[in-house]
Image (cartoon, rainbow over all chains, first blue to last red; front, side, top):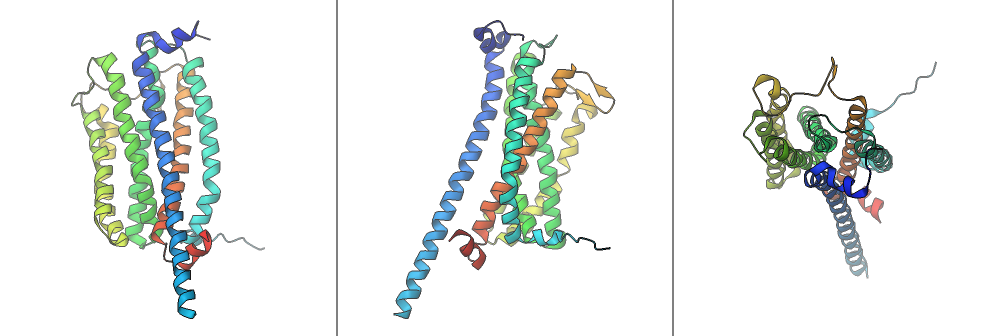
Length: 64
Length: 245
């Protein structure tokens, strides 16, 4: 183990901003991409289901 | 003797690929998470401090995977695009579209982490060096591919037009890769080659595990995104209505 304290770990030998900035940017991109895909899928399913139910309504009103 | 025939072309139909991708992506996501956990542990707790760059070198554990994937994803994307042009399969264009945003994000990350590495080591966020400039062009190629695809209403025509762009742009990938050899660049040369590595073995192990983690992430994400694209483009078909109802 090479770190004697948490402070030392966060400081990264003076490169803290650059190291944590890099890992933070990567983590942020990954989180946003996953979140965007989930939101997109939910919106797609919502639209599909409403399309299907509105089609069914027109079918039933036409047959009655 | 009875031989088992695998009908690979079966999966070229969006309908069967939708199901296959749905079964596969959780596995890739699980492996990616596992590899990232091990890779991060090695990055921060096992790999020793670098003699020249101190702790600042640890940026390598995200910079190299992001850069490598940005180039690799482009080649795979251009490959799918080329298949689409050659065989006129619908799935090919969808796969190319599913890969582009992830490739663009990795190219962006490569530039951001590179800037964060360049500032303390070279004293500059950005230089117009061959490696950096060609990587920036890669990001623009991804953005151009997506913008061109989005600007054409008919998805099949959009697939064809953007496929040509993807194939022409592929010439940039070897330029990025060999830029550090062909020109005098501020960017350092490859740390790993077929002849061996100039890094400590735990650094190399950590980097390779992170590269693999990024690969698995990219595959999982592309499978999830292609499912969204399939749902969107096939929304008027009967099978989609049955699948979501």
